[in-house]
Length: 250
Image (cartoon, rainbow, N blue to C red):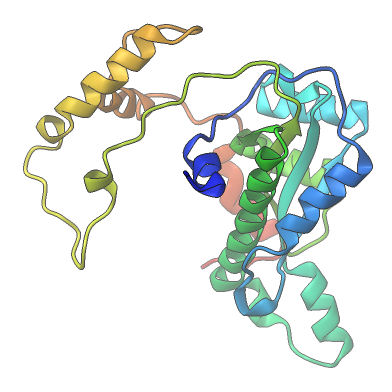
């Protein structure tokens, strides 16, 4: 019998259409509690989770992301790298907090937030719910900070929608394992396009057969075209926003 956890992980899909049905408080608390049990660097728990349930604020986030479905009945949470809480604790005990402003501290908070988010995704999907990450909150990180009234030494890393799915997209085929996993040393690939020929065809077949947004596409072409796209929103200002938030990222 196939392990249910593995089955769940191997069948993950991003859901962008949700039923007009809200999560119960108990269900949301359970999901967040699962997030809290993710690994955390040095047990510092350097993240926070904002639940955005005000319709006007959800609409504002939908505008930032340019994703109208963000304003649906699905629950919206924002995963935040948070060194503010620990800085206030340390300062209250007479300790310097300079190390909480560094790249190392920012990345540690980011990892903690992302790991908590993935635990939440797994917990939600185990309940039959659907999820989708929203990297697009970074289209205007300063507006997100203002919207959530975030203090210094915090930064919104990811958004996450959780709700009752109203569709079941076809499972996207991933890169072959040999293309993403290696032993000891990064492989030297002489011709990356030729090495991905079979996967390009697999993805072409997938896009041609799926129920919605059918198109002719390959993985290598997709990657190439992404380099030509303009920077979304104000993402080229993220470094400046991080410095404004108190992180010294020289």
